[in-house]
Image 1 (cartoon, rainbow, N blue to C red):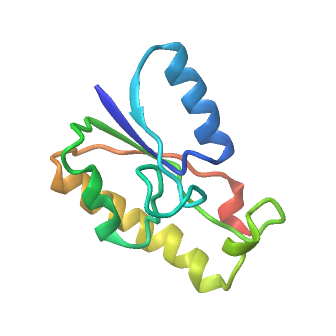
Image 2 (image 1 turned 90 degrees about the horizontal axis):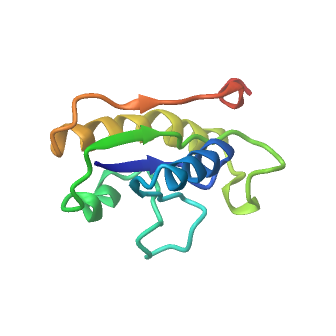
Length: 117
């Protein structure tokens, strides 16, 4: 079992990784806040960014990636509303398309009140 955790640098993502480590589970934990052009960088707005995970034997996806204007979000990400909409809506569509591409038919999607603004 290998789990892809999108939005891994957020609160839920960090907690989930902690528990995955405790259970000795194999996972990949990308996030947009990590250094670009690295294995753990993932901007879910662009479907081609998922290509590097196609051959990683992922069996499960937990989708946590979402943005909202917040003082806790890095300044480079606190941009216009359409940026957040693209991350939250198009990003989720891209996660679903990626899951279909690699043969996963169920995704765990987690959201918080942050998406309501």
